[in-house]
Image 1: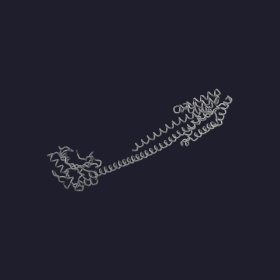
Image 2: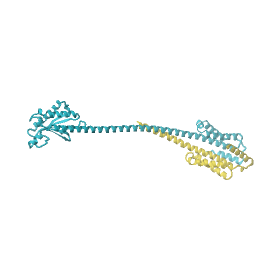
Image 3: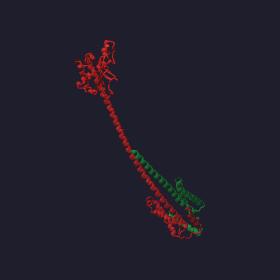
Image 4: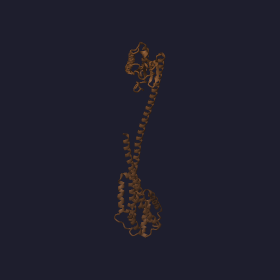
Length: 122
Length: 305
C-alpha cells in the first residue's frame, strides 16, 4: 500500500521533472485525514511531555492542509505522512514519560509500605 | 534543529523540477535513518516489546533504500528515510514505556501482595487478641459468679449456725452487724467475779464456738472482753484482756489455729448499756466474739479501732 503510494510519489517526482506538471496526482485526502486523527489524538496527551514533537506535527499538518488547498498534492502528501509519524512519536514520548513517572511512584510507594510494615511489626 | 526541513527542501527541489535527475553520493537523512534503525534493531528490549513498530521502521527504511538504489529523487528518498527514522524512534520509545508499564504492573502486584500479607497478619493478630479478651472476660465473670455464690452460701450457712446457736443457748446473743456476726456472752456464764479462769459452765459455749470455727474455716474471729465501770479502769482493762485470752486459749485447746483468733480487752470502754443500773452493768460485763467475713473479703481484720 505505502509502497505503491511511494512508487506513485516517485513517478510524480519524475513526471514533475519531465513535464513540469504535477496536477495529475490524486489528492492525498486519506493521508491528511490520518495525520489529523493522529495529531488530535496526541494533542491532549502530549501537552507537556512531547510538546516539541507535537508542535512539529501540528506545523506539518497545517502545511499539508495548506498544500491541499492550493492543490499541491505532492507536498500535501509528504507533509501529511510526516505529520502523522511525528504526532505518533509525540504520543509515544508522552506515554513513555507517564509510564516512567508511574513506575517511580509505585517503587516509592512500595518502599514506604515496606518501611511502615517493618515499623508496625516491631 | 528541525528535522523535517531537510526532506521539505528536497521535496520542494523535486517539485520545482530543477534537480530531480541529480543523484548525490550520499543522502544525510538516509544515513541518519540507517544508524537510528540499527540502534533500535540491536536493542533486545525493542525486539521483545515493540516488534510491530520495529517492523514498520524496517519497511520504511527498505523503501528509502530502494528509492536510493533506483536513483530516485533525493527528496523522495529523504522523505521515506525520515519516516523510517521516526518509526525507529517510535519503536525505541514504545519499548521503553512498555517496559515501565510492565514494571508498574509487577510492582503493583507485588505491593498488593505485601499489603494483603500484612492485612491478613494484622487480622489474625486482632482475632487472637479479641478471643483472648473474650476468654478473660468470660473467666472473670464466671469467677465473680462463683465468688458471689460461695459467699452467699457461706453467709446463709453462718446465719443458720447463729440461729441454731442462739436457740440452743439462752445466755448467748447473736447479732448481725456491719463488722460481721457478733456473738455476745455474758461474763457470768464464763467467769467468776474478778477471775480470769473459765468456769466449767462455759464449756458448752466454748465448744459451740470451736465447732463453728471448724465449719467456717475461712473466717477469723476476734474476741473482745468488756467490764462495767465499777472499780479501777486499768484493772478492768487487764482483767478483760486476760479473759479474752482465756477464751482464745480454750479455743486453741480445741484445735483452732491461734492465728485465726485475735483477743483483746477493752475494760469499761464501748458500753452497750448504762452503768448506772445493775441491769445495765450486767449487760456491759460481756465477751463479744466477732466473726469476720471470709478472710479474702476482709481487709484489716475485724477488731475495734
